[in-house]
Image (tube, rainbow, N blue to C red; front, side, top):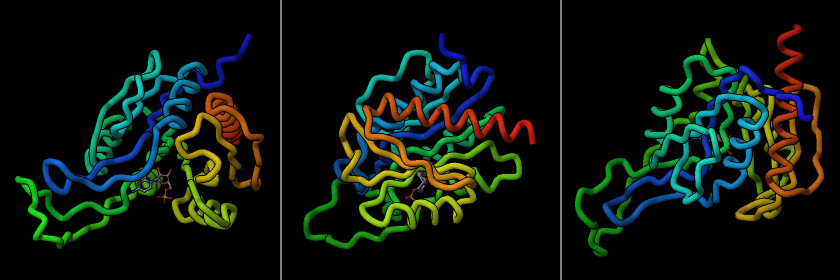
Amino acid sequence: FQPKLLAGRKVVMTAGPTFEAIDPVRGITNTSSGKMGYALAQACRRAGAEVVLVSGPTGLPAPLGVERVDVCSALQMRDAVVAALPGADVFIGVAAVADYRPLSAAEHKVKKSSAELTLTPNPDILAEVAARPDAPFCVGFAAESRELDAYAEGKRRAKRLPMLVGNLVQDGLGSDDNQVILYDDAGRHPQPRAPKTVVAQKIVEHLAGLLAMRATR
Ligand code: C5P
């Protein structure tokens, strides 16, 4: 028997990449299979939570019982997150959001002769949610190619997150396995390398523990 660690909780999450259109056939995106986010959505659902998964383009099937909202761009992702937030206890940002988008998408296919592309920064969805006065418990992800501890803990503090999941990109990208370190106010908690489904379960257990501690404070 497995206790329902997130029973009665509403979890809103993002997963996958975003796609920022340049013209009808081209765009800017990040590499993200969506596997870690989808595994985490499933683990939250299995733990008894109501789950809204705001997903960029991935081609993955929605986990059973999870409400998926399909989006393309970061702006659409932010709008869908804000719409899903009322009543949320937890927000988890797993998506690899593109840092920049073209200032305007061309209506027609751009010709090769015009090589100029003007970019503008996308909003930081997670930082915005965490800064709300009614912010749910916010969990971030950081995929780094080096100096994981410094970058991950730096992001956790900059975005004011009680919990962040860090991994080295070479350990997880596109793969079915992942090796992560969980960061919170108490420090770093390295996890063994495991299938993303198992890693997701560990993240849920850690998250549920922090939520329970917060409730008794
Ligand atoms: O891109 P970065 O490494 O800062 O991402 C760290 C965390 O912030 C991730 O959880 C990611 O989903 C979130 N994020 C976001 N919106 C952005 C950039 C990152 O929600 N524009």
